[in-house]
Length: 119
Image (cartoon, rainbow, N blue to C red; front, side, top):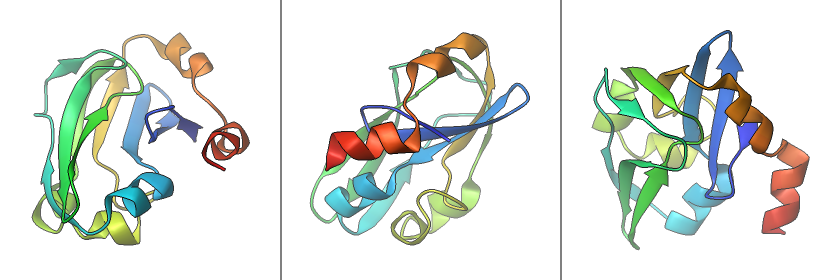
């Protein structure tokens, strides 16, 4: 997994990245009650807002850690947003993206680097 400073992660398999929010992000948000996801086929740029999460505390913009075309969204998270509070770094991923600039991953942090920024 690779992590962004804005608390998103991406896990890469071949040319496909799976994107979600970090455990830290979900703890900061509190109980997540609504998820707005990108549309399949959308083209996004690294650092661009692609999603919105609403919690009982606040709304948060979610930024894409990498550039590419959205190939899938997690319908389960859309219908049951609370999954993000239970499994933010595994089954509660947000969307999958076909990477258009794979080298962008080199700019992201490792788990240890990310954890050092939030402690």
